[in-house]
Length: 484
Image 1: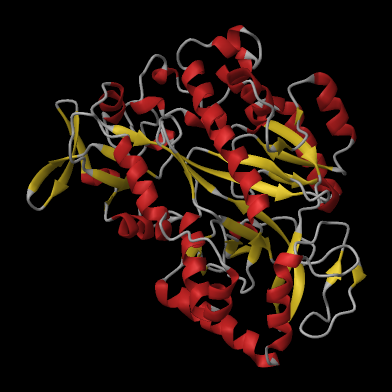
Image 2: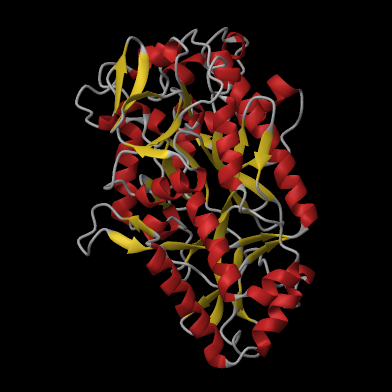
């Protein structure tokens, strides 16, 4: 760590080995941050504090919350919001956008292939046993035609910027990607607390995401349904992302339903209403495959709709995302994404992967077990920062516990180098300090069109020195400004 000789409120700002979004290595301000930097120097000492309080009150009044499971202090929390925006120049965003379009196109081709002809498995580009051993692979989807061949209509891909300044993909979230409501809420609050600076910076809009998502869902509707009825299926009020479910339903003008609100009759899905049964054509579902249909998956699920899989297989209802997409969400399959892109698109990946060790391989597993103190180990099917070991920050006991888990079930884990996520200025206890961040842009795919709103959810590791940005693990978020 080395301190930068800067005036208040940057007195405690430090540069580390990680790429800094605002400052060059010598402490000079990057061009696209210069106006923000000057504005922060001009503000009276109490002004930032007052604006942070105004932002927090806005989140409180809107009920913008998330849930932490297994916490004795109470589960419902106001989502932590950092006042200072993360700024991305247009040329950098162009690379990100092209890379994400390439990625979602290849992922959909891969999913269609493995559930139909299996060419990529026959050609041994991706190991057959890796796919078939994935707990999210659904044999019930073999040979099923999905609308427009769209398996993944909504993706939230996690990007990090490494020391070189390059953006790389940390993981793809395909099953039930969350967080987009916070991206939209952050923007609303930012316009409220920094209106003049926002308007002079030339920030590209994100507010149209709800309508873009609605258009994507409409494109998936059964063709014979001229005015499709679309619903958002939520596990209910106790789910950690329930605020987001309600928020997006309002944004799109959709009915928010739970499994008990739907029923299957004559191979059609209906919604119970006060005026009687109403046919449902498209379900934007926010619960995992396991809970969707107790007749097909977990019989103890009280959240799903009995018979839904048969209706889906017959083409009488569309689901976003499709059942069985989780196989491409698997962190071990992620390691093959560059090869998958080359196979289907005959292109090199525009956005690189992080180096990944597959622990089902004996040689790679031995290397990882010998270097647990240097690596990050992740369970292949977990999200939200759970099921993860950050070796350099873990105790000997924690590393030994993971050693036993890896040895008992190597297929369930991958390992990666401990990367120094880039750092950005954050308002912390009255001053501006650097904190580690990542970026989750949201990609929409309707079969013939890819839509990416210019921005995304920048997540922040608010604890000093922490690399974990997940809200469930003490992280927060900030607005992301993509410049025109």
